[in-house]
Length: 95
Image 1 (tube, rainbow, N blue to C red):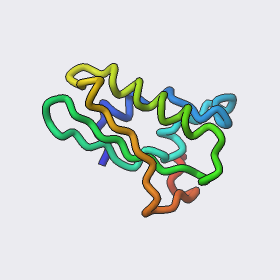
Image 2: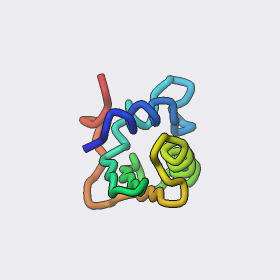
Image 3: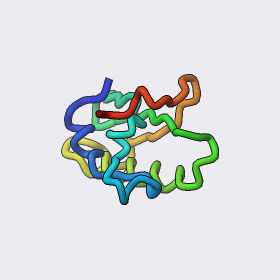
Image 4: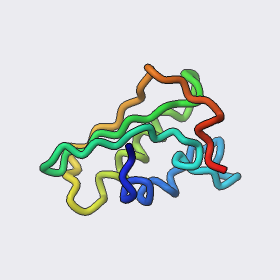
């Protein structure tokens, strides 16, 4: 589950390959889950379209920075992880 505030915060974070087309990580369906663990701790789970994505580090940093800037979030307690137990498919794309 992804809370609305996280979707809003990430709606203008882009994989550089899709920025020209205006397709954010939210539109691509890369944000699998955002867990709020209390005390400002937040864990974001991302899927990647490919294990070979040359921009993965940049996307993870951008997501972390955007979540860390949200009210009530402790910037030192934000984790962003790529999860591999589910494959990204085009079914995750927004209309």
